[in-house]
Amino acid sequence: MGENDTIPVTVVCGYLGAGKTTLINHLLSNPGDHDIAVIVNDMGEVNVDADLLTRESDEEGVVDLSNGCICCELGDDLATETERLAESREFDVLVVEASGISEPIPIAQTMVEDTADRLELDTMVTVLDSFGFWNEFDPENRQPDSDVERPLSTVFIDGIEFCDVLLLNKTDLLSDDALGEIEATVRELQPRAHIERTEYSRVDPDLVLDTGRFDFEEARQSQGWKRSLAHDHDEQEHSPAEAHGVTSFVYRETQPLHPERFANWLDDWTGEVIRAKGICRIAGREEEVIGLSQAGPSVEAGPIGRWDPERDDPRTELVFIGRSLDETAIREGLDSCLVDARAGEWDPAADPFPL
Ligand SMILES: Nc1nc2c(ncn2[C@@H]2O[C@H](COP(=O)(O)OP(=O)(O)OP(=O)(O)O)[C@@H](O)[C@H]2O)c(=O)[nH]1
Image (cartoon, rainbow, N blue to C red; front, side, top):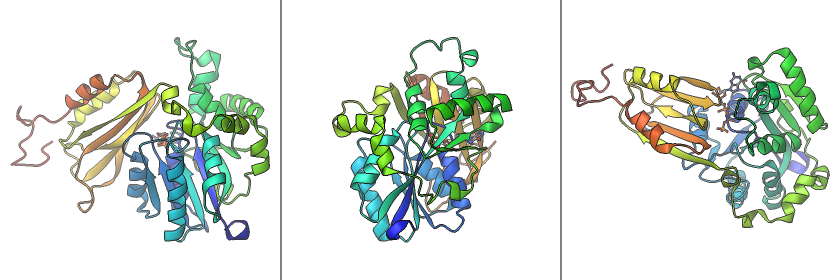
């Protein structure tokens, strides 16, 4: 508990694919002395993060706030949900995962202004994909098209500037030299926060939970805070997603994917997708839920659990997030990976999963 029996709230921000869900999974499996409740906000109509979290952790205290971004249109829901959670369940710290394009300041404002007196904003954590940051900002590492305007950089910067703890994540993908340079750059942008290098967001829970680091007075004095109050967020015409030209869609299918065709499709997969994630039904892996997670250049796929007959039908459910996404091409590509029963690849009557 924080001061005066309030419940400390840790807000986890960070760009798409930085490692926020990885951090929350890590905290749920290494809670230390804490009893943690989690609220997850994800972009798009399904909350894949909440699904992956509950699947991996069997955690009951995970609340799903989907289809919107908590820093704007879901601000009120965030306040209501935190209050409801506080009434319905015992926990001594609350962790809120923001969607990958939420802006940290409005979330902090919602937490400070709207929640019941029991909750107290305690720590703003930003998870930084150090590898992505390096590619985005280092001139030598820039892609040939990188002199086009890159408005998403502002999301990186906001997260760095407004936080109490900054995790330089994905350090395994960079050399020590590069990391030193990144740390020096980040330190310029953010002299106050505690900076920690992490792999797979593995931190001591005490570094991010109940730290007492959030300083309301200091936050209120920051330029970003004043700017954000100056134009009422609720009345903004565009959500951050729209302002950055980011769209998302969900691919859903119950027919299994052919493992080889799907693997080939993943290999050839390029383009405007910033982030894809979700679960897959793969022929021949009948029991297993196969998780897929792509963030920038890296794609990870593998078993993350088993289908639970009580709660789910085996299916593929993937969220794609990107700029100028070619939704039709992606849908067609995935459709062509489906097992084709008519071509004799699959006889569902004889065997639900043949390969
Ligand atoms: N190599 C490497 N991969 C990592 C590390 N941390 C996380 N990842 C991988 O990066 C991908 C994205 O991680 P997530 O934790 O889902 O990222 P997120 O910030 O929750 O993503 P969004 O919710 O989409 O914004 C996953 O495939 C992770 O396994 C790391 O330190 N090193």
